[in-house]
Amino acid sequence: MPQKKQLARNSGIYFIINILQRVSNFLVSVLLARTLGPSNFGIFSLAQTVKNFSQKIGMFGLGLNAQKDFSGKVNNEQYKKISQYILINLVFAISIPLLVVLLSSTIANNVFDEPQLEIVLKYFSIIIGVSIVSNFLVSLHRAKRNLRDVFYTQLIEGFFKFIILLVLTTVIELKLLHVIYIYTTVVFFQFIYIVIKSTKLDLFNGIRIRKLPAIAFPNKGMLILGAETTIISMGYFFNHQLDRLMLGFFDNATVVGQYVAIVAIVEVISVVQNSMQNALMPMISESYKNKNYEDIKLSYFFMVKIVTFLNFVFAIFAISFGPLIIKLLYGEQYLNSSISLVLTLLVFIKFVSSWAGPTGATLLMTGNTKYEFMNTSSTIIINIIANTIFIYYMDLDIVGAALATFMAMVVINIIQLFQIKKTLLFKPISKFQISVMALFVLFLITQIYLSITFLVQFILVLFFSLLVTVVEWWFLSISDKTFLRNKILSKLKKGK
View 1: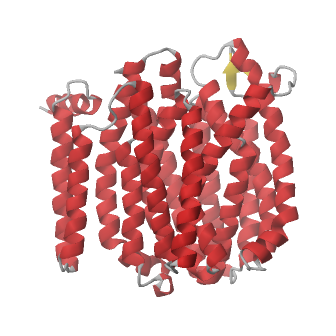
View 2: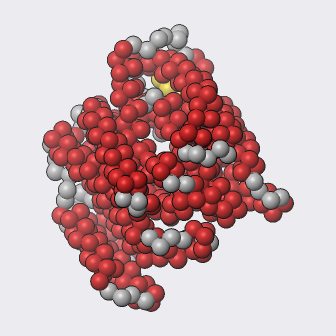
View 3: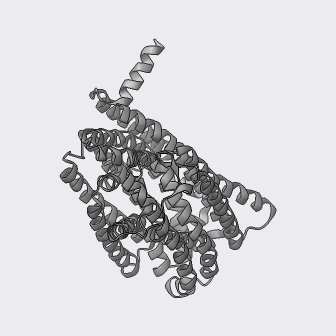
């Protein structure tokens, strides 16, 4: 029970952090999309994707490995690793931005055929270097569950950016380079804040970052683990952003801009899942170190029940009203004849990921890095081949990008479920998950075969939301170990 209380508490904090981050990012994307137009917004989105890709390489798996190594009680040997982590982090924080500058012309002109992208990438190289250091420091705060500073770091990055952009749009005609200047300034403020806070972070028996052991070069094992984790992180990245890279390569920036507008709506569904997963990862690592496998199982299913229920409601709402929301927020220039199909595919992917549970995070935090390495390597190959076939040869544009992502994510989730069963010896699919998936498929059938007005759609969303609530409560009420049920009943008894 303490494990679940802690998971619920930390998930609540991460939920607030992720809500703020997602809301601010969503508001920024709407503001930029309306101000810049589909073409320039597409160029900016491509630059963002290249930046994120570079940061994944530059982190060298340090974020995930730091959360695993420094969560819970840390022994002396683990503590000595910190200087090796910092040395790797600084080397990549310098070398990766330089590489982006050197390759910016090739990426802009030869890969995407968008000359304007070159100057954006050169400015973004500054952001990449600073962010590699900031992200590593944030991962240390996550490992030590210092969530307050994680909260303020995300707040600086998100809402400062939006407020500055909003103010400037009322004063001047915002151009692409103005946006880049603002992004660079905000990232520097975020970097200064997290560096100051990290000097006070208690890593091991009162020892802080400013009192580190002598710098030591990383050993072969750490480099191999870093390389494996980097490929895993890049696999997650490709699963979510390879589609826009392939669209930029085979199509044009305008199509990328339209696709990113749809993705921005879909990403809202990930808020609860990411919140609970961020809270869960250090706890799973700590339970695994203590060989407390029952806690891992209970926490896993607790997250599945909560996230699957909430994401079911978010998903059917997004499928029903997503096109209308895009039209109202982004404008008719972002609408596409295939928007409903693309939205349904992308929403289904997000729902399946939450329905399956925190499979990838659980494998990583329980020392099964090689499984995730093989999973993501295979998924990258599938994604590239599928995108090439659907976008280039079949000329399906954004539908092709969505189909390729759909295939890759379904494959990786199925494989991970089998690996969870094999390594942790519990069945990761419950009757609750089967029941909710049946309801979701039934909802999709109504969308395909019924001619639906706005009023009928609204009634359907309410009806299926009520049905999944009944299913959720039924499965929670038959388990005397469920933390949420006990909390609700205790509140009701006090009310009486």
